[in-house]
Length: 324
Image (tube, rainbow, N blue to C red; front, side, top):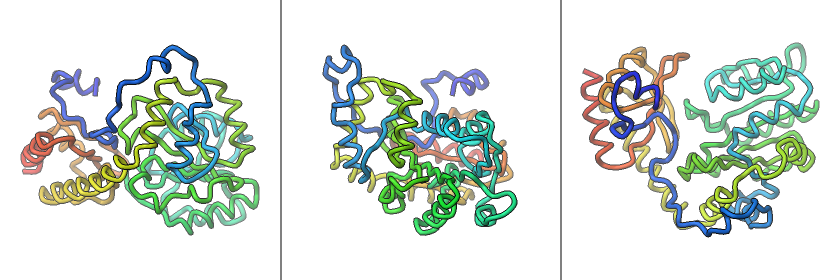
């Protein structure tokens, strides 16, 4: 956003930011007790219990966002071969490469071949499920099969479920705790609380403890722990927001399709459009103070959800100009 402000000379307050997959209608944070600001964070604050209830899996390890786990996990294995989605969140590849691993970038169709015993087999496979930005969701049975193949030779399946909250039936959390299976979750996307920097790691107890020791104490600030505990416990808001996000996602699909930009994939929080005109369309929208995310491989755009009716109207009008 700051780069766009400088490039287009438009004040930050005038922008409609659709470049992220963060819920634009976040969970309403109440005033926090003064104690959470004045004391060191404490583990005995029921955050882990609230997370276990919400996710339906025991022994969650709170983190400063799932990014903390993405950076830590590669440091806990000897250098090997890590399979990373060619299309997806780039920090995964960066973290494994930085820790000395050989990164093998994979298209979806290549994963099965790479998991077969023999030359070029993988030690770790990272799956982003649903994928960001393509929205691809892998069936639970397929992922469990991949995990079993990797675990037989001491490998890991790392599943980044940052965008799974609106489709919990596709989560691998019911199988959390199996050796060699790591599941990452984030509070930033569905709850719209990216600034709190809260995520969770689920793994077998041995690996969980190794990550905990590597990260050290007080990985989360006290106010972030309190906000996370309250948000994870608010079942009424969660159920209402899940239904609302699916409706808004369908509205975004219709809007983009109506302007000749049919999505190639997406989730309840964003839609992904493949187009050779991605750079031009992004620029035309930016000149109207609407920021969307562009990808070069393949040429595509990711559209987040507008947060109010004014935002929907602005996007509709801007797309009319961009798609003439």
